[in-house]
Image (cartoon, rainbow over all chains, first blue to last red):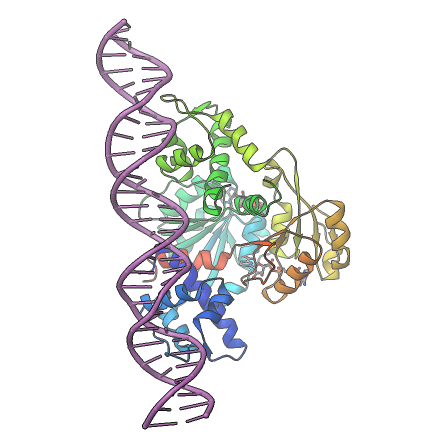
Length: 204
Length: 204
DNA sequence: ATTAGGTTGAGAAAAATTTCACAATAAAGT
DNA sequence: ACTTTATTGTGAAATTTTTCTCAACCTAAT
Ligand SMILES: NC(=O)c1ccc[n+]([C@@H]2O[C@H](COP(=O)([O-])OP(=O)(O)OC[C@H]3O[C@@H](n4cnc5c(N)ncnc54)[C@H](O)[C@@H]3O)[C@@H](O)[C@H]2O)c1
Ligand SMILES: NC(=O)c1ccc[n+]([C@@H]2O[C@H](COP(=O)([O-])OP(=O)(O)OC[C@H]3O[C@@H](n4cnc5c(N)ncnc54)[C@H](O)[C@@H]3O)[C@@H](O)[C@H]2O)c1
């Protein structure tokens, strides 16, 4: 089983490999893939090595082989359904994004507390909170993206967890209190922007 | 100077502290702040200690003191102007987000290659790419958020860098080739969602 | 005043992650 | 066939990050 850090790299490799394949390449060196993904060549090799993926001593790695190994690791034989909670600006952006489909993820529904959002035109159906349980069950959803305002985040998370959700991608800038069996991945865009500013030497 | 990892924690502390202050607290223990931000108490203390921030041997840390120390570290005496390149769904969400203002960041303008976007109603003025140089200069912008499609990302980044941008928050799922003096912070939501799925035990 | 209790601060240890270094070896060239 | 060359695969070393541990010490209670 990959570590949380390693998984990020593996998924980046997959993206990079898909791009390289589309460009017509069949083979790739650890050095090349490293450059494509911002990882050192040694680490690329270590990562593959850790999953028993072999290259050719002088010919690098076979892209198709790498990709199918990665698909195996990430179990991409079936599509994973996802829901979005909070159909504001961010929720809308995520629900409209076409890129997820290439990665066997499917945003199947959105939820919002605001009745005005239910009538709006989105790419996906948007339901009131009452329907959460049935939709999650019907689509066999186990992961949700949380895009509600900070103050509503904990309540919305509790709601989701009550309906059996196992993982939450939390875009709200607050740490959710969740039971051990629920995994939360926090993405805080404001922190990322501030951090960039600090380190890009604008401030000091 | 903080490490990149450490900065993330420090900024989280700041958010947590602002919340705790709003709740009426004046003092905080490393343990409390740790719980609020998902960091161990020891690490909270180490972080503060590394910046010469002192607590009281038994009374914890003074929130106002912590906040002003953090403001000093992050130089929040003036507002930082930011631009968004690519006013699609994600660019729109970011440009409309009000939370940045509380953190002395100001999204001042957007850019888009698509003329149709220029007339649209946003919270900020949206310009064609030709105006990039003058806007960046006029607002003294040194950091940009990049929300263009993958295929356009490198070109847009080159454009920004040509106009003197020092830092890029890159939301496109591709590694940008940039000169050493430009810092890029990549946020790949797709990877974050896939990673969550993998580790939340949905797949194995 | 004295004591008890609880938290900080920091050195040491541990754990995690990354880089180094190079032998093994397959492919390509001669 | 032989040599050269480039790349993998992997232990060892280095570095970074986190946790452990506990003395120091402040605060509050008695
Ligand atoms: N937009 C950004 O650029 C940005 C940047 C950083 C962080 N964030 C965070 O992302 C989250 C979403 O941001 P946004 O800009 O989309 O906000 P938004 O206000 O546009 O959308 C929030 C949506 O959540 C809905 N909502 C409120 N309470 C709810 C509940 N209990 N259950 C279900 N839905 C509920 C609202 O009706 C609204 O539609 C916020 O927590 C914000 O802090 C956003
Ligand atoms: N929306 C999401 O949930 C999501 C998730 C993961 C990654 N991303 C990434 O974020 C980026 C933006 O996503 P989006 O959903 O907002 O896409 P979008 O298609 O809605 O918006 C892209 C915008 O960029 C503009 N553009 C194209 N080329 C440009 C150029 N050279 N200069 C300036 N503007 C240009 C387009 O006109 C459009 O308005 C993409 O790279 C996408 O892969 C988005």
